[in-house]
Length: 95
Image (cartoon, rainbow, N blue to C red):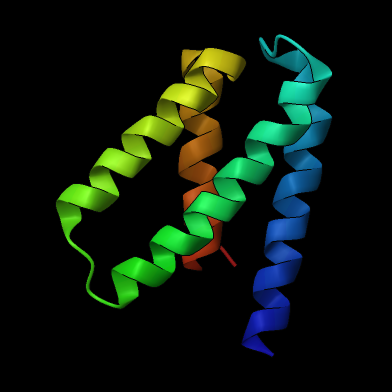
Protein backbone atom coordinates (compact mmCIF):
# COMPACT_ATOMS: atom_id res chain seq x y z
CA UNK A 1 0.00 0.00 0.00
CA UNK A 2 2.85 2.37 0.83
CA UNK A 3 4.35 1.89 -2.64
CA UNK A 4 0.98 2.62 -4.27
CA UNK A 5 0.79 5.90 -2.33
CA UNK A 6 4.33 6.78 -3.38
CA UNK A 7 3.55 6.05 -7.05
CA UNK A 8 0.42 8.19 -6.83
CA UNK A 9 2.42 11.03 -5.24
CA UNK A 10 5.10 10.91 -7.94
CA UNK A 11 2.45 10.76 -10.66
CA UNK A 12 0.65 13.76 -9.19
CA UNK A 13 3.96 15.63 -8.91
CA UNK A 14 4.75 14.94 -12.57
CA UNK A 15 1.28 16.14 -13.61
CA UNK A 16 1.69 19.40 -11.69
CA UNK A 17 5.22 19.93 -13.00
CA UNK A 18 4.21 19.36 -16.61
CA UNK A 19 1.21 21.66 -16.21
CA UNK A 20 3.46 24.38 -14.75
CA UNK A 21 6.11 24.09 -17.46
CA UNK A 22 4.65 26.82 -19.72
CA UNK A 23 4.70 29.23 -16.76
CA UNK A 24 8.41 28.78 -16.09
CA UNK A 25 11.46 29.55 -18.19
CA UNK A 26 11.63 26.17 -19.92
CA UNK A 27 13.48 26.49 -23.22
CA UNK A 28 11.62 23.73 -25.03
CA UNK A 29 8.80 21.29 -24.44
CA UNK A 30 11.30 18.43 -24.74
CA UNK A 31 13.16 19.81 -21.74
CA UNK A 32 9.86 20.32 -19.92
CA UNK A 33 9.14 16.60 -20.24
CA UNK A 34 12.64 15.11 -19.99
CA UNK A 35 14.13 16.98 -17.03
CA UNK A 36 11.42 15.96 -14.50
CA UNK A 37 11.80 12.36 -15.62
CA UNK A 38 15.57 12.58 -15.11
CA UNK A 39 14.98 14.00 -11.63
CA UNK A 40 12.60 11.13 -10.79
CA UNK A 41 15.01 8.49 -12.12
CA UNK A 42 18.14 9.89 -10.47
CA UNK A 43 16.25 10.81 -7.31
CA UNK A 44 14.88 7.29 -6.89
CA UNK A 45 18.38 5.87 -7.17
CA UNK A 46 19.76 8.42 -4.71
CA UNK A 47 17.05 7.69 -2.15
CA UNK A 48 17.79 3.97 -2.41
CA UNK A 49 21.55 4.55 -2.12
CA UNK A 50 21.09 6.83 0.87
CA UNK A 51 19.04 4.16 2.63
CA UNK A 52 21.83 1.67 1.93
CA UNK A 53 24.43 3.96 3.47
CA UNK A 54 26.09 5.61 0.46
CA UNK A 55 28.54 8.42 1.12
CA UNK A 56 27.16 11.92 1.51
CA UNK A 57 29.83 13.32 -0.82
CA UNK A 58 28.79 11.19 -3.77
CA UNK A 59 25.11 11.92 -3.22
CA UNK A 60 25.80 15.65 -2.87
CA UNK A 61 27.81 15.81 -6.08
CA UNK A 62 25.08 13.98 -7.96
CA UNK A 63 22.42 16.33 -6.59
CA UNK A 64 24.47 19.34 -7.67
CA UNK A 65 24.87 17.92 -11.19
CA UNK A 66 21.13 17.27 -11.49
CA UNK A 67 20.37 20.74 -10.09
CA UNK A 68 22.63 22.28 -12.74
CA UNK A 69 20.66 20.44 -15.43
CA UNK A 70 17.36 21.59 -13.93
CA UNK A 71 18.55 25.18 -13.52
CA UNK A 72 19.90 25.30 -17.07
CA UNK A 73 16.57 24.22 -18.53
CA UNK A 74 13.96 25.53 -16.06
CA UNK A 75 15.78 28.61 -14.72
CA UNK A 76 17.45 28.93 -11.32
CA UNK A 77 14.29 29.29 -9.24
CA UNK A 78 12.23 26.81 -11.26
CA UNK A 79 15.04 24.26 -11.28
CA UNK A 80 15.53 24.55 -7.53
CA UNK A 81 11.82 24.14 -6.81
CA UNK A 82 11.66 21.24 -9.26
CA UNK A 83 14.57 19.41 -7.65
CA UNK A 84 13.61 20.01 -4.02
CA UNK A 85 9.96 19.09 -4.52
CA UNK A 86 10.87 16.00 -6.55
CA UNK A 87 13.31 14.69 -3.96
CA UNK A 88 10.80 15.41 -1.17
CA UNK A 89 8.10 13.43 -2.95
CA UNK A 90 10.48 10.56 -3.67
CA UNK A 91 11.74 10.46 -0.11
CA UNK A 92 8.16 10.14 1.10
CA UNK A 93 8.16 13.33 3.13
CA UNK A 94 5.07 14.73 1.36
CA UNK A 95 2.74 11.85 0.76
